[in-house]
Image (cartoon, rainbow, N blue to C red; front, top):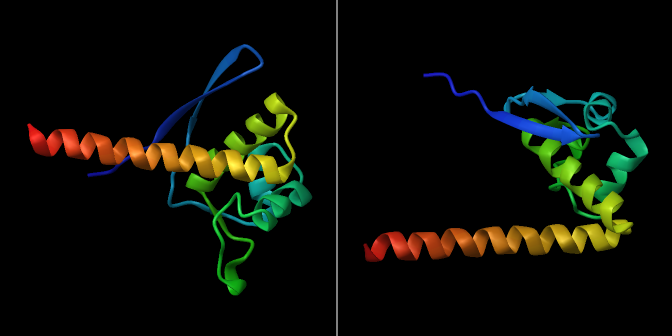
Amino acid sequence: MTTIHYSEIVCDNCLNGEIVDERNSFDLVHFAQVCGQSPDWVLQLLEYDILPARPEDRIHQFFGEDVARARRAFRLQRDFEASFSAVAMMMDLIDEVQQLRKQVRHIHFDRD
């Protein structure tokens, strides 16, 4: 069975659909283009641990799941006029809330 991951992206009051295959990998330049940003901006995401750390030999290899994370970071930066360090903290908090919600759902599911 083939799994296709579908995400809808809303920008500038128009709805654009985009299929993101999490198995695809991108180099730095192509990843920056997909995110609509510069390679320097992407490197800042790595420097502030907004994107997951990579082995030294794959430091500039990115995956489909990284696209969503980078775009979320951009929206936080834009909407709150936040620095990279502030975005990193917000992303950590968002990740923690999502993890806690999963745990609560799991607890409720086990009780039923």
